[in-house]
Length: 221
Picture 1: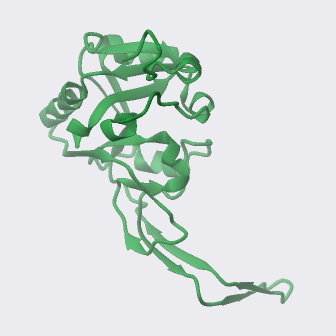
Picture 2: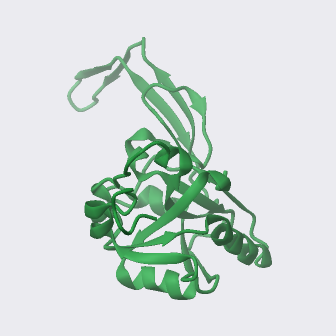
């Protein structure tokens, strides 16, 4: 899985991205935090959904007690999600070899600017970066798993899900996720040491407007 990722991009404030670059500061919020966060693109009430059942060919009728009005629904979706304390998440934008293959350029969606921050750290040695996080959490005796997010259509699929599934409305984010199974109800914070030997910092706006993932750009990575 890691072998398929050419670069990881982490977006955030200038202060936080400099802390990542020069100290290797890793900040992992809880799954519950993202379930409850009311912020476009970052908050996701469906986070942690582990089962979806769609009833597309039936009809559900509900009576409103106050008025006696009957509401009818032809398509009904039932979902179950984890609400307990299960772990902490670290997410990055993943540029995979498949995503870049046979393309002159790759454009990052403009929604990333407003949703994720003014600056971006591009991590060029993906295996080394993920291994550093694994090593630090191993010392802390915290189990961990990682994967690219698989995006699905919650309106159509009936299936069991994992912590590495999200609604396809977020597919423009191309997320790679690291999940630390802490059972905490608070952020997990630690440092893996400087990463500037294999990472660079850019303005998010520059990346989106001038895509350095274009083979015609002199800064092409």
